[in-house]
Image (cartoon, rainbow, N blue to C red; front, side, top):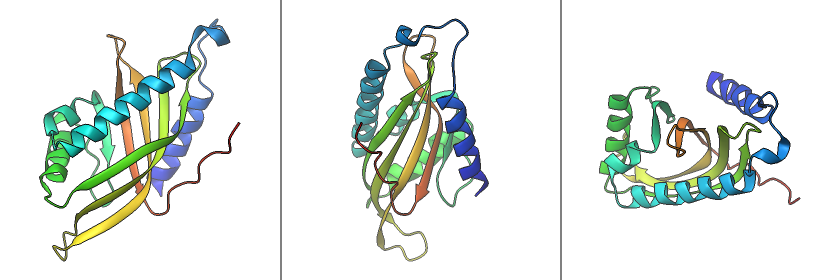
Length: 166
């Protein structure tokens, strides 16, 4: 529950982000949204390829992975271990897509919220299991202009409904 509260606070802060003196039209939010959706597509391809090294590269040096039932992975070593264990599962099948992307007016932070379905091995029964749920990834623009995940939270359960069409 504390993680959910932290995520909601983070999302509300990002939604209100603004840079002093920045013009509303200075940031091409639609282009950033397309870029982030492209990164997420590559991220899913890296999962399908079981490429732990490429997966770890999607995170900023101070990035965090929050998978249900596991400790937060807040260091490069912890992230590689969490990712390595996940892709080593012979039953792993993962599909995810963002339902919403919001970009801060400053253009240096964004978040994507989406849904996932996953097949993996149940640690208790050693049998295949299916899970679904939602995720929230907070992105930060890097010095090289690329985007890296700084917070990646996965929540099991029914996926959040898609936002209404505008």
